[in-house]
Structures are given as C-alpha cells and as structure tokens.
Length: 123
Image 1 (spheres, rainbow, N blue to C red):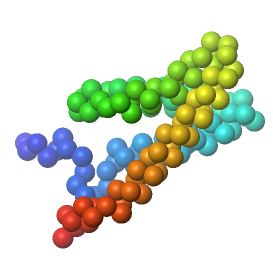
Image 2 (tube, helix red, strand yellow):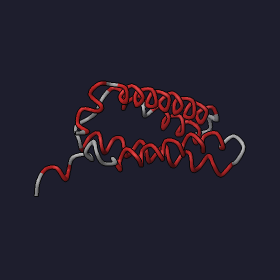
Image 3 (cartoon, helix red, strand yellow):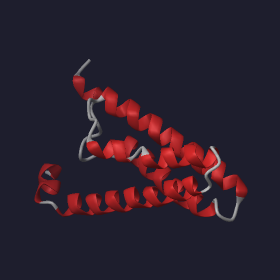
C-alpha cells in the first residue's frame, strides 16, 4: 500500500478532517453563544471543547505537528474546567478564547487562498 493513504486529501479533493474541524468550530461558537440563554448548551459547548482538545493533542502527536498555537488552543478547555470547578467566568474565558482562535483561522484561511502557491497544483 502506498504512503498516500495516510496523507491529507490532495489539493483537488476535500480534506474531510479540515471539514469536520470547521463544522465543530462553528458549532462550538454557536453553542457558546447559546450557553448564556440555554442551560443545555453549556454542557454541549464544554463537550465540544474537550473533544477538540483531545483530538488536537492526538493529531498533533500522531503527525508530529505540535506547534505553539496548539498550547494556546488549550485555553478554552482550561476555561471549561474552571467553569465546572465553580468559577462561572471560566466559561466566558473559554468562549472568548474560542472566538480569538476562530478569527485567527478565518484570517489564516483567507490569506492562504490569496497566496500565489494556492492555485499552482490545480493543473
């Protein structure tokens, strides 16, 4: 079997991992906003943050891709833990830092679409 089966999707295909990550991120942003008005949303938001942290650690370890930004991605999880320990502001910390990460990745994605290297392999 070739090594290409373990690599991310080609530039011509859809990267399912990135798509799942984007859907989970948008869902977490929505649920985070709802947690201030709907009690059930807080637990779902917390669950998504924990799943995101565990998957980030796993994939970073699996692909030897741990970078400084991954440490910063743990701040929302820390906020969730603080929230469940009784400090209600922990959930707000988690939500605010999630928004910072979300905006960062939107900007980063927009920059990558405008880069000259983005369309070179489309031939």
